[in-house]
Image 1: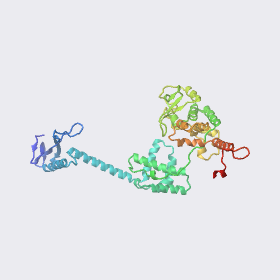
Image 2: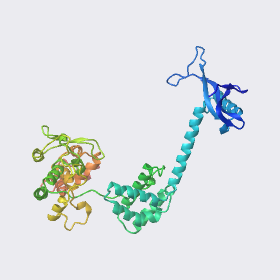
Image 3: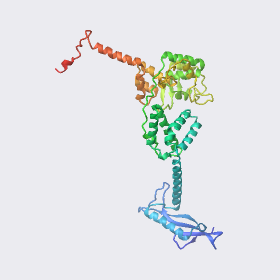
Length: 429
């Protein structure tokens, strides 16, 4: 490149290409020079003693004449930058201007892509959602697809995501209620829609608010009312132990320590403290980590196991990974013992979660304080624990009999009011 050549425009100069021509003249490469406030390494303006900024030279490349640049255009660009400096607004340098333009184009491209995605009908998003669920091995997908086909799609399947409003979801609720579907099924349908919208938001198909947040879900009483009597629990344990020692140990821990299956599946040998008889329940569902406590039977069951490393899972699956569900050994034993024969209400059926439910119920039946039960169960609120205070009919009967006894003691044996009770006709005196 040749040396810089000044132009008649202050701050504008150029160099000539040694060989390349633009028309009859050599191609010219233009540059602009101007002063800007000097900044330190933190980006702060450096000031003089009189408070005025220290100015420093700045030179930026404009472009080739063969690309359409002239000295006049370069001068106009320089004038705009100077104007920005005077107003304190806009880009102060060409680099800032170029970066702003790139950012603007990128933002416009994102907005255009988002608008195109948001205009996709719900049915298309549903296909993507289903594909992801299949990849994740979601077990309830058949049920969700059935709800989508029969109830969700007829109302919102053809609508773009941005057009789906709470009123459309109310229509789904209404249609299902008219068909006399259960509140549980209606809630499930709304939950499916919620999950599909969340999927769309995670994958940038949708950026608005999830419309299900403004729809009231029908209330249902999903509290499990069934718990095992001690004899039933022993029968279950005995039958499982014959079939699978690990399934027996898992069931025993849930029954006697109150752990969820997912909590048991995550346990490592390092979580067990045999000296203090504790289990460290790490990062459980919806709450903080907690300690559970070993019964002697659970302690002995763990002592009988071979411990290789504290980091090893206690109950790994066949591939050495974390179990995702309880072995069907439990369900087969429940079926063989006929514990669910003739039971149609899901809340009264025995399932693996009944073990944890039984643990809490036994504590309450034994007169344990609900706050203690709450901590042992790892519940977020006492309201979750209070359900167990109503599970045993014997508890209610005892309360009723205690009241009856106190009422009887308040009266004398002849049916006359005792001296510490004021007769009604005496109150006004």
